Amino acid sequence: MTNSYICCCIIPPPCNSMEAYLLLEVAQSDHQISLKWKDLTYEIVDCSLQYITLQLNHIFLEWVERDLHVADEHVGHVGPTIRQSGHSSQLQNIVAVRKILATG
Image 1: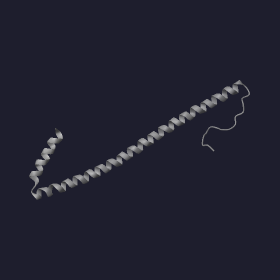
Image 2: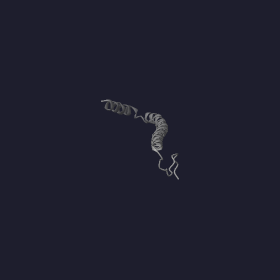
Image 3: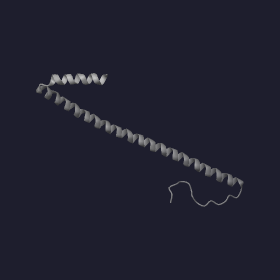
């Protein structure tokens, strides 16, 4: 059994021209209603997909922000370690060269 609201039963032949006309009008109206339902359903699916995409992007952003926070903490720990090792002046030269290469 189908979930359609349109009756899929045997239709007796019309008795006159007016019944034939009305039968055709009803069939065409049912067709137009079905097309509108289809269009609305596609819009609902599209909106749902956009919402899901937005939620996934939000989750991805949270992951990236968390990873950035971890990387910031790592840089914060590495800096003092390098300074304690006595190699900070060499590191500053390397960083300066990298900045020049990145901009030019």
